[in-house]
Image (cartoon, rainbow, N blue to C red; front, side, top):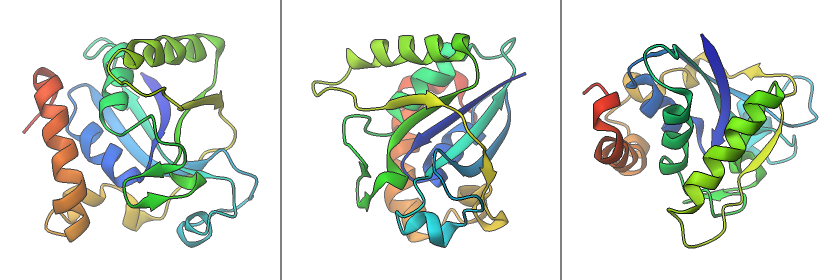
Length: 174
C-alpha cells in the first residue's frame, strides 16, 4: 500500500472522487502543512493555522498505478489558482502535495509537469515535505457518501465527479 497526502481545496471534493476509485483502500480527510499543534475545522477555516485541508489517499499500486492517482488530483481541482478553489478562498484551500520521501517528491513533480500541458495558466501547486497529519473530525470523513443531497455536494462535488468520470471512467466505480 502507498499513501499520498493531497490538498485540492475542500477535502470533501477529493474524498468523493478517491472513495470511488478502484484500488483505493482508504481516504482520510485531515489537515497538514501548518503550525498549529491541534487544528480543528473551525481554526483551519479561519486561515490562521497555516494548515491546508487535505486527504490521505491509501491505495494498492497493484490495482491502480500511482501516476493515475496523482493525475486524477490535477483534474479534480484548479491547480492554477493560488489559495483558492471556487468560492473557497484562503491558504487552507491551496493546491498542495505533501511528500514523505524523495521518491514521492519526484513522482509529484513529474505529475505536475504532465498536468501543466492541460492548463494554459501556470500551475501553482506547492510540493512540500509532509509534517504532522491531523485527522479531521468524523463529520468530514466520507462526507459526500453520507450527504449526497446536501447543496455543496450537488453544486460543487457532482460536477467534479462528472469530470473525473469523463477522464478516468475505467478507474471509477459508479
